[in-house]
Length: 385
Image 1 (cartoon, rainbow, N blue to C red):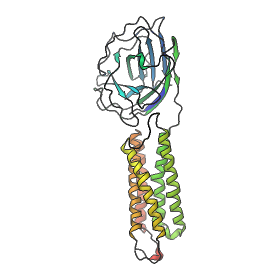
Image 2: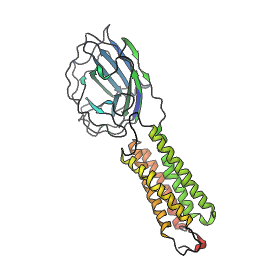
Image 3: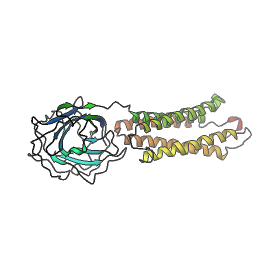
Image 4: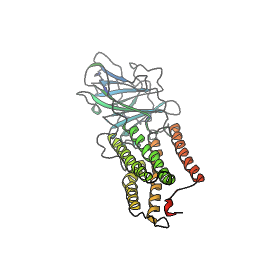
């Protein structure tokens, strides 16, 4: 998937007198030297470019055949895409990359949220050569041009766009139907192709990074907080007295519940218009729902039952206590695995994943050390084994 994402406005002036082929070849066909469009006194050109040239787009509208020629260039090396609409969901997306021969490949996809955009059954564009009127930046690694019907873009005012970029290429660079990794950069902008003359698009990417906030909340909710709560319950009963229980409940019921609720809120806020819910769209989402609305409530109830049925006269650990332990362990293990799935879905990169598992390994190391040092401490007044 993409590495960068954004939205923009493009004002592409009308163009007359240009010769642009009307055929619609396969999205994997490379442009020939005769393609493209040239502007004249009746033409309209519009452009948008991110600082540093990570993503730039130029549009030229031809009023004669009612088409728009678009050139995309990016300093990223994996793939670069743009979509027509305010979000990725349900939008028409055009993804471009270089094949094994260094030639551009363009693939039209149907927008989807947090899943691989499927190949569009109808490829509604024509692959053209880069127009001579478009300046190609020296830092651009990916450059491609295509022509689409003007009906795809609003011709009465600004049109909203999104873009996405990735440093890693598709699994099969020679196929327009190839799968590809998640983006590592995104943005949004608007372009206005309704006005004659030249104009600059408007950057509209200003929304908070709710997906990042979601990840941070869930990291603390299912990696840090449970580790602390379990450590207190397992090893500090004698030292803390009844305080251990208050701390354990406070962390698991207060800390985890609050962080989890915030994490779910943030991921829902990240969803584009038209997408009702994140749950069920990915394995990561399904596991998250199982933990949040299945295992976690059961664990809270079991904790309450264990405390309510506690007796200083008991001679062994009752089954409901043990069930409380194992439901908690399963929830934490699933939570740790799901955090990693989230990192992979977010295309966080090997370094971030390595750091995450290093933290998990250090926490595990502390528990192993405590087991060798003395092991779990049960209620000593009950002489529990």
